[in-house]
Length: 547
Image 1: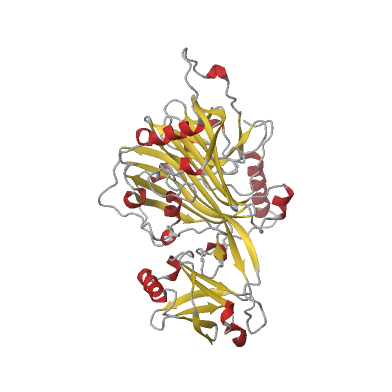
Image 2: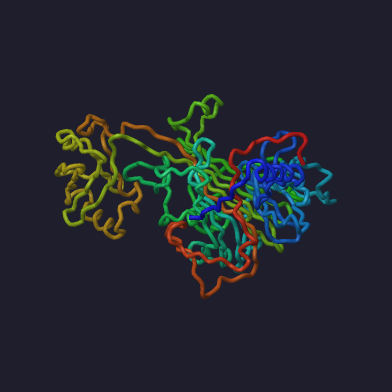
């Protein structure tokens, strides 16, 4: 404890002189507002006044920068202001801008306007000999065939800002952040097997709301947290691993995600393609190819942005919607939107030294969080007794809980016969007939992976009737669902071509949560990178007097 020394003033002399001195200082010393560590800015469309999202902001003559957030916001360390650096801002379909960092305020939020760039024939190079117009399918086929030519096949690294978070309405929840260096062995190698990751730093951001229920892993056993009509493998709970596997361009030779599957063999076969108006990125003219597919209950929609010059894929967008969802909110129905998003992926590449390297990737999926006074909390296989322990959060009512018709256990599409049901406190014991439906094989398969939660519902699935009640009369699963949007994103700040991963170093464990007991290694130049934390309570529109 710090004790303050006491000084006694004569009321008529000392105190008066002391108060006069304070007044004098107050009127004569300039008052400087405290400068922040970062310059905060927001990009807006000069016409619509809407935020420009995922724009690239680079520091001129330096190989690093940031990507604007979904609110158009970004931040730059204040240290660049004194160095006379210039920001280069570019975004697909907009005119690039250069801005002196010294002209930006270190105190207030800076609004920066971007003008839409309309593609005109005069901007295209017209050749004397007219070429045959390519169909959308032919353009996509050439782009896929050109991946080994346009993307790096030698080792390289990317350093960037990673984050995962959820959106509850429009509020950030459970925001986690990190600075990572990703050592990629090149596009000829399988990413999941050969890529290594260093964690420079991570932060669980408590400036934003934390929701412990929404933080829990996906649970397709108790159905407490699920993606409706979809299944997401958790890869040991590592969110960055989940994000990387959803880059279909990097993983063009393996199964990446639903409907796209293997980009090199399945994309063209699974979708219908059409051309849209061409667009511009700096001086590069890009084909815009729309592709879609409708399945029973689902629709898939995507776009590819492909260079006319060398067929390099600059950007890929892909979204899958549920057409039959009953959980659509009133706002959606009022807007006439009859599609519920299941997942959406945006990945963009940038050209560095004539090759395409990742610029950013954003993976969004919608999930449901279930809350009920009476629900299943866990299902545990008992290998010794050859039974399942179904645990509830309350004690089930005995007579109803022992009715066999209230349970269905499906193994590889076949329903198992239950020979016995017993109730023990909060647990119901289910005994399948070991001689029917492959029950012996089922227990061997579960025992092999040692955890029932690692087996997807397409292999082993449990269904429970709502007629099951607890001792207080609550029906099973008679509760409410709350919808959240989950985001995982990586924004590259620096690309290092022809860099190999260090031999003697500690790397992230890919099948372990990124924010749980992972090695942290800060390089000497750690301050060259920063977390582009989203702004809180940011306005989404600027005014005509902005930069």
